[in-house]
Amino acid sequence: MSHKTSSPAILTFGEAMAMLVANTPGELSGVESFHRRLAGADNNVAIGLSRLGFHVGWLSRVGNDSLGRFIQQALKAEGIDERYIHLDPQHPTGLMFKERAENGADPKVEYFRRGSAASHLSIEDAADIDFQGLTHLHATGITPALSESALELTRHLMQTARESGVSVSFDPNLRPSLWPSEAVMRDTLNELALHADYVLPGLSEGRLLTGGETPEAIADFYLERGAKAVIIKLGPEGSYYRGNLDGTLESFLVPGQPVANVVDTVGAGDGFAVGIISALLDGLAPRQALERGNLVGAQAVQVVGDMEGLPDRATLESLER
Image (tube, rainbow, N blue to C red; front, side, top):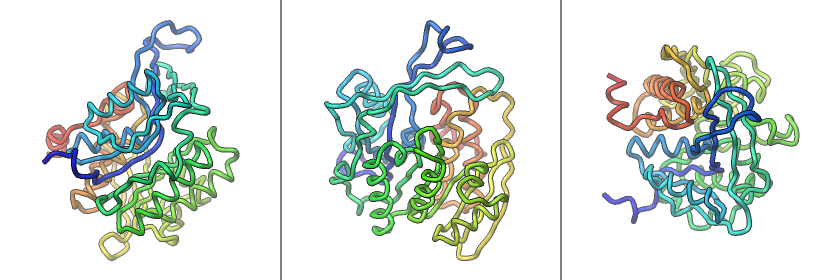
């Protein structure tokens, strides 16, 4: 069937940026040549789910500039439904520069995103969304950090989706540099998590947000506040599940996929989210969802880009055999 007429079944939203990746290692100030890629946690997840055959919409604002057109073209090429991408003639598209990482280290990045088109996202941008046609909404903690109006939009989308019977996943995706303080970040993200069915923090993120030390304590913090399941990323160790998706409370750890060569860890969490969400929407059990999350996350760390390692359905099926 053609996706063009029906509204998207999955929605993600946030800021996409053009990313210039250094072609050589070392300090960015000394790098002369870069290549352009697409960056942004929310659109990484959108692309990953679209590659697996889901009808995915992505809500954002881009500037009326070459970078905004690049983002729209890149997402269209990935099969993303672009009906909710708004053109903002007043503000520019965000840009970031990224070091060429060595030995699996986290690469340094520099952002030029203050005052970007996406930071002006607001509730008005959600006016046309067909919540009846939606089955799943994915939110991250980056979008509400962009501005007060982007926070209002995030809260509105998560609340309305939940009220409409749409399942909601939430990846806190901490970006402390975007928040006025750690306390504001913690309080805001924990408040937003109240509207999520599935909360997907990393272990250190969960510790910072909840004050709990163990995966179990972190999970209980959100389960007591209405989450159905909490899935905690443990890096190379794998992931931890605690929830009552099947009616009974269960907890388990699923060991990570061994990766021989870690090239770039950026995007691993987005790949993990793609695996979890796609598996749950495919009707798989929680344990299979974590296995797929680990698997897709492991693909993402073996390439330079944020989303270049995300598999299509045929690749995923061959990996899962």
